[in-house]
Length: 381
Image (cartoon, rainbow, N blue to C red):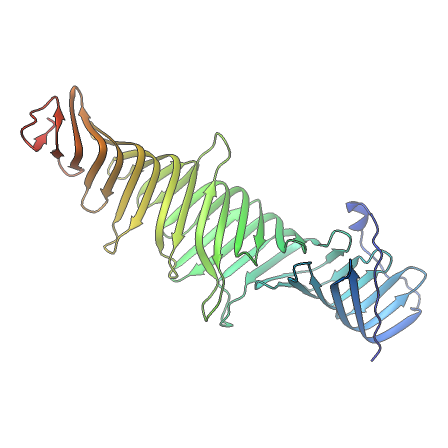
């Protein structure tokens, strides 16, 4: 077995020049080495290891052609990235590498990508491709992956262990009975942190929830202890002057931000709309508050909690308070903290006011206002 150790010198090529395809000369190589091995060090730490079936060295051109390369890269934190390819070319002076497909990239966090031509830039510790690619988050059970990605073009920053899909990002997550479809212009995946960021015109669609905004973050749960990788939570935001749109449980919601948490089954655990949140239900009820939280109940209903600057419009009634709870199944609404209900010139104040979407009956604790205070059951006629 022949083993060769090389320490690369770094060049300062521009992006355009560095992305030019490397081509081996037509002439015979100066040296051929079977079972080729290469180790690259940088600042006294090992950052690259290569094993290949065959290496052809062209001394004059400072090029090395390699067959069936198997690369492993490390950053200073000790996190590794692995690449397999059909063939490749090493530029000896710069340490840059071209890997030709079909090629596979795998991260320490279980992320896998397939593509064609890859370029490794030694000075920047970056791997890039302009080609189409598809990938998935590996399951610890070895079963079919449920979280998949695709797009065109990718930058892999080995220093931060981040994977940026440059355009046409698409992701699909099958989780229990639910399927999440995510789209955006670009995205960055952090497999070690179990997060994926989606940028520009981000949309998320599932059987129970539809979201659209400028950007979204998926909080992923790793496939460990026999489980499959999946979505633990979603955070969606909009740029200044824009809003996030959400459709959930027959509610159309707009807000500055939106968060959702999910069970392992893919069912919604809780959602929260933040910042000038407004919701319109199918029965005509309109709600607004700074924070609007929806929690699913076992009977397929939802508890809607509203906090800070709460206003609820129901028929001709206007209800206001600082905290309110609405049950979507029973139609019951409970108002707390500076609660008022107004209809035309009539107005009720109370510590706690209870009303319903099903009738005009109102129950008031410690009432005051334009109606009889002695009765705790009143109707705004």
